[in-house]
Image (cartoon, rainbow, N blue to C red; front, side):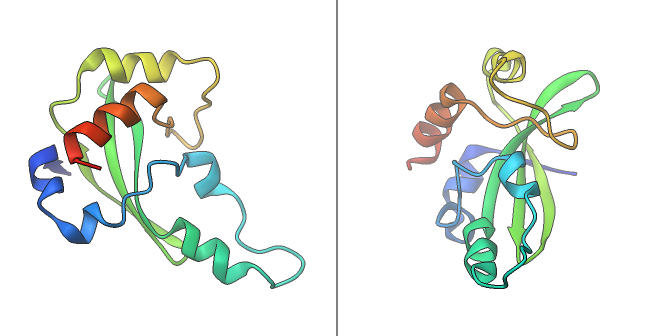
Length: 119
């Protein structure tokens, strides 16, 4: 697994221009196909990009970056330098739910990312 930091992400336009802070594990895991095929392309396109999520690694919350495209996704790596308190708070947040081992980022973590990435 690749270790990432905010400086390297901020300097990578391929990633920084495609970050979707509003994407959550729940949205990612919703079915793409519905009874009608209308809207399929839009659903794929709205999911394409890079999303952050939290995963428990060796008993501690870790911020991860995932590349989502078409109907696939690949975890790019873990983000270093994130204050542990922000990660722990997001995981304990009662309004967030773990989906397939992924916790969504909360508003505090989004604000920290926006500031650190210059979004």
